[in-house]
Every structure is written in structure tokens, then in C-alpha cells.
Length: 280
Image 1 (cartoon, rainbow, N blue to C red):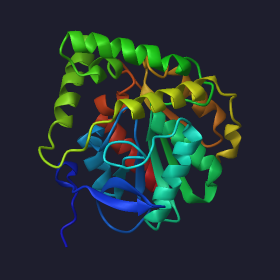
Image 2: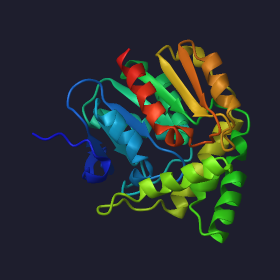
Image 3: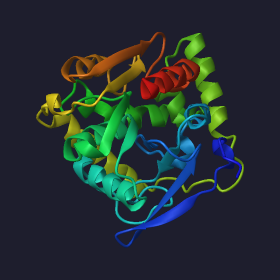
């Protein structure tokens, strides 16, 4: 059997999770511990950088999915990170897995932290990218930053992620265009865009996370790789440093001249570091 390791060719599947259909894609070799990708604000299956997915899927089973109410998945999008985490756990269990690795980006990193706290035996290792702890600095400002940059992008015919994820240096702008072009590589079977209602629910969940009392991260004993750009405006980079300081078994990478999407700008370095981290 040929193993699919190209995300643009991976078919979209669905699975029933307690009466709700969840859309997902899986690729890479069978066996071993799968890597579950947890997505960012407003993102659907097609918003994962194919270079990151393909790079990790060359060595590990990778599963991306739309959580409840997002993209092609049914149901109503929760307004709390904790509810999103419970839905993600139900999805993972429905696939039949007892242990997984988690790669959570931005909002997905919030969800990954809660999963590790709720279900510690389910999680082997954690990769937390462009994210921060509950109550972290500036997280409660994600909504105004997102809406303002989305408005600016619309006026200049850009993808909002070019402004939100990348620095405005010459190098940052060039990398932003490359990233947006990579997201367009899949020509068929593309996912549904997020609905306005789901987007608003995610913003409420993020704001609540930003004003929440800090949690005791010492309960997360798993190995953790924390990564971000050194100039993240959405979830300020100091949150990554704080995560690495407060988590008992964490390592930190900050990419220079990079913003919220640092792992996409530095996808080659990030993939290499993730593979080493997962195999150590």
C-alpha cells in the first residue's frame, strides 16, 4: 500500500463522534504515536502549512481535523477552550487512540494545554507553537488586533494572515506571500470556510482564556517543545518564554524576524526540530 505523505493529495474523511460528524485528514506511516494537529483561530483543514504537515508526515502519522462546528465538521462551536479540549479528546478517542502527541498552534495551543491537564495519560509529548498560558500577557487583545488587521488586509487585497502572522520587514513580507501561496496548492476537495458564528465563538473563547486565572502548569509533566517567532503581535512572544519557564520539562525556540507564524516562516527548521523532539 502506498503511504500518502502529501497533504494536498490527502482525502477528507469524516467520523461520527457522539452523533456529530467531524471532518479530518490523515497521512503518513501507520504505527507509532500519531501527531494530532490542533488549529488556530478561524482556521480549517486547508490552513495548515503543507510543508509542516508533509515534513512531519514523512516520519509520523499526522492527523488534522476540524473541531466541532468548524469547517466541514458539524455541531455548534463552543465558547470555551475547555469545551474545545473535551471535543478534541472525544475525536481522538473515536479514532481509537489511547496515546497521542499534540501539536497545538495559537488557539490550538490553549486547547493542547487543557487536554494535557484533563487527560495526562492520553498525551505523550506536546508541541506548543505561537501560544501562551491562561491569563497570558496580551491574549485578551487578540480580538481587536485580529479585526483591525483583517480590515487593513481587505483594503489592500491581502490575506489577513500576511499581517497577523508575519513581520512587516522585507523578509517577513516575502515569507508571508510564500506561505499564502502554499495554502493554495490544494486544488480540489477544499474545506468549507469557517462561519461568522463559529469565528465569534472562538474569539469569545480566546478572550476568556486571556482573562482567566493562570493555571498550575507544573501538572503538565510531559516533554514540551515551545516555539514561536520572536516578534509575535497576536500572542506576544513573552508568553512562549513564560510557558517554557513554568512547564517542568520544556524547551524553547524563538525564530528571529518572525511573528505569530514563525513555525511557517521557518518551516524547515521547525520540522527538523519537531522530528528530533518526537524521536528523542
